Image (cartoon, rainbow, N blue to C red; front, side, top):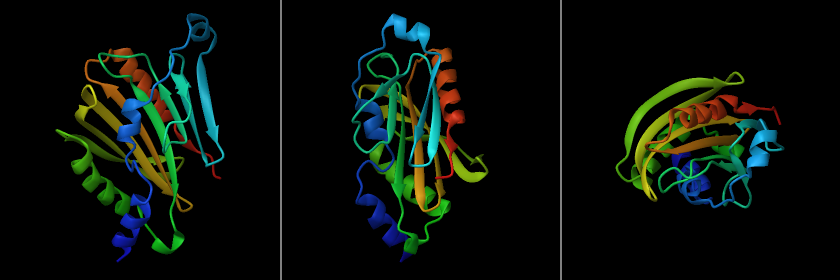
Length: 188
């Protein structure tokens, strides 16, 4: 019963895993002057998180179903992106991180063509248990590698999704890892 309620509560909000919005968000590239003067952007949200994004990543506005989104310049046919999405969870459902893991695993199979799960790791974000997934599949315009962190704190689900097109240079991949590692819960 709990799983059915959890599924209904979360599916009422579209883009559960954030993969679709991570692929298609348009944005203008930063100018050379902006890249030279901005070393990093720290996005702080009243939704209880912060994220540090290195120079070269452009903040995106009005991306559906996301709290914050950033994009890098196009690699092949796709723009690398990072999104953070928060969802409040009804306390009466008493959903656990394991419940979300199972629900997301079922959704990925349906949403990601040619899905190949590369790894799952239990990590901590500010002491709070979280799950880190790495997987590949077909995105809109080519092969993609996703890294996704999700955690639950104070009846709020946090999902951070990094999308990097296949063939991206090593420094871009490292930049993406830095972004994921910077994700922090701020206690609100």
